[in-house]
Image 1 (cartoon, one colour):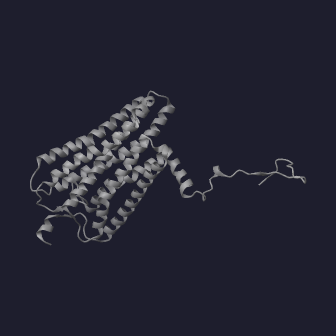
Image 2 (cartoon, one colour):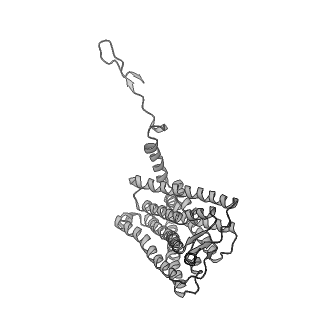
Image 3 (tube, one colour):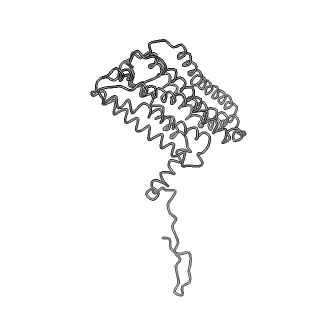
Length: 339
């Protein structure tokens, strides 16, 4: 291998040689990857096909599913490739792209969850003003900001990282993250460190605080309403709250992992997979189970589009027709016999 190729290649040292453990990890990762892709695409199709789901909450949920696909596709195929190959490497440019898209996945998810919390806040705390506040133009603006702000900030971060001189070529992880790539540099970059803190503060900490404040306000309002209204509000918020806690837990483990990379290979695999696969896998399942409208739409799509003539639902039993009894002169003699 010549010097130029060597200097443009990053090697992963956390995999170990191909063997039974790697093949088992490959099978588990592939299975979770397939289920995650299927679950998110299914949720997106349900929201797209059912016009009465074209509401702010489900539009944001659609984008959360899109974001989950970005996270899976940015990392998992390369992880599965490295698990079964002898050489675990990636080009330096490919590593930077992996950092960019995995970071977009993490930050956009938090921003989407913050926007969804705002939508729930308006729905519960200002129900009479909901449609005047969450107008179609405002929803479009929020969706645009969900992607524009993180992508713009992260693109500049990748530019800063790409300008750092590289002296090391080994990463003791399953995939590239910005901190690991920065550590490959020969020098300390104050700008990179400062800008990284700025990104974490604005795209992780700030959305986290906004979600917490939204739920504090929702809780205070729920304490003042009737039990029936309180139950309805909690049922509306539960899927989002579970999703938020699940993703926050994944982020927390990822941060700890990034700061303490000297862990066993098994822990390495577990933390990498849970950060990239578990949130996108769990989110559509949570909303599919906990949201009545989505459950109803899934049943409707299966009944009318997939098996339109095969399923015999009790509520769709055909009515018994009455055949009139005819007399000899051809006139009807009554309501007739059921058939």
